[in-house]
Image (cartoon, rainbow, N blue to C red; front, side, top):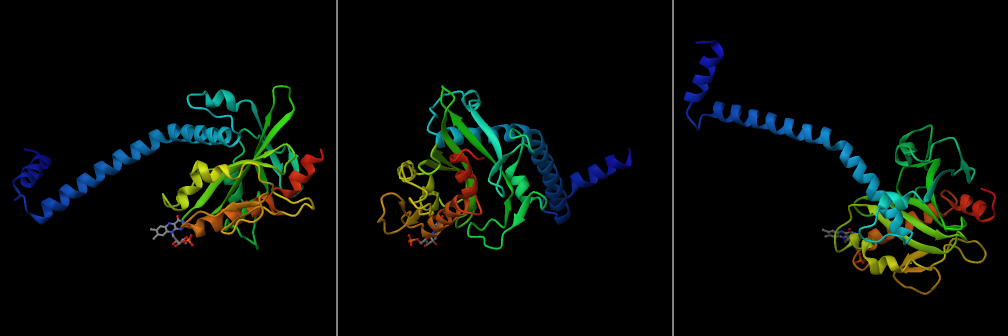
Length: 263
Ligand SMILES: Cc1cc2nc3c(=O)[nH]c(=O)nc-3n(C[C@H](O)[C@H](O)[C@H](O)COP(=O)(O)O)c2cc1C
């Protein structure tokens, strides 16, 4: 009989409650499970990435108000024109392919981003280049501008989009596609009733000052959004991130240029 057979018989004959046998069985089990998990993670990554992209596209359609159940997301998304904006100049740039440019990766790259000294959205670094989406009407005229936004809430970074009308000041909608705030509390940012408040609000006043805010005491019908009940910290996070991205360090320069035809 070979050595390995001897070992196997020895192992088999060990008492069931032997510590060595328990450790060996547990180790083999961990090894097999880790192999299964790694195999699934590697092999499902491509499908996960495709689903993530589809989900993002669906959210862009939703925030622009053109999504309905059962629609072909990819087909409708093709009517949106992606473009990369240089946030420092406030103008479009053709340095990158908008279809493949990854804003999230760029924000981690010291050559493509800046470290923020003033960081109300708690994001650490801000990408210098961001992908925006232009929705055109059938006659080719601009309908909406969709801008990516992100920032920290209470537990997580919230990633989403804000859709603006073509005057670049009236808000059509706001929507997050990724966050880990608490269901029933911070996650009420996904509540359609809360989101509906954003429709028709204005970013700036007539003088061009950024006025949009989330507040517990709503006074100004043009700029005030109700804070979420029992979730002041997430509300503050969303308030900060919207102000950051719509402000000077975010898209303000681009929006001013774009509405004046200078982007
Ligand atoms: C388990 C747990 C989860 C919470 N999740 C959130 C959250 O996601 N967002 C949030 O703003 N507050 C959350 N809170 C509540 C905050 O701690 C804090 O009390 C709240 O933001 C204050 O809001 P209020 O002034 O409207 O009551 C959570 C509290 C607990 C105990």
